[in-house]
Image (cartoon, rainbow, N blue to C red):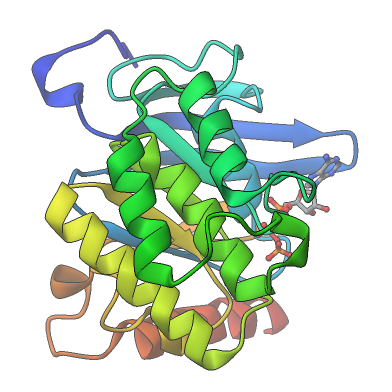
Length: 248
Ligand SMILES: Nc1ncnc2c1ncn2[C@@H]1O[C@H](COP(=O)(O)OP(=O)(O)OP(=O)(O)O)[C@@H](O)[C@H]1O
């Protein structure tokens, strides 16, 4: 496919025939995908389905073995993150010796599009003291700092790879609420991977379901689930059907 920049490709993600092969085999195969703007996307699938690999390809931190991918019309060049993309993995990239203030200063130095007031607003909203060292914060507070760092960049696309896995239910809810509010009010497209399907309901309006390195289902939940089946149930049904199909 010709992934040259065209007006319709100022879409967050357009992939065609995308594949990634590691030594042990294919992690992602023949993936063609469009992620439209202003969506909160649930990226789900069983362990080893290829979710992290797909995120790595979108960030440009991984290089495709086959096919092509465009992020806001640009081909990731393997030289770090696209300026309009923020990426937050479960292992949050924070320095424990830094205070929150120093962490935001680091964000400002490394991101030309940095919005200090917005980042400080997110920290204040989370009730995290600016003078505290990151290493002394709770898991939930660290996630809020990492989120402020990711959002302070003012991204158009925010990728979150199981960011809530180490949080208690209340902290998860608080982080998800913040995410949703910010995504809606700032027009950010969010791609969120999680194994906890129930917590994605009411948050995500677009689903990408991977199974064994292939896309099983992708699209707006309202379209995929015309009869109102909730996102979690919809994903689970397809995952069960795929697993049964293999067992048969
Ligand atoms: N760096 C790597 N080297 C070799 N194989 C890898 C590497 N990263 C992932 N894989 C393999 O690729 C496949 C997809 O892995 P990936 O981490 O993308 O899946 P995932 O859906 O994110 O899984 P999980 O839900 O368990 O986090 C797996 O079989 C995994 O073992």
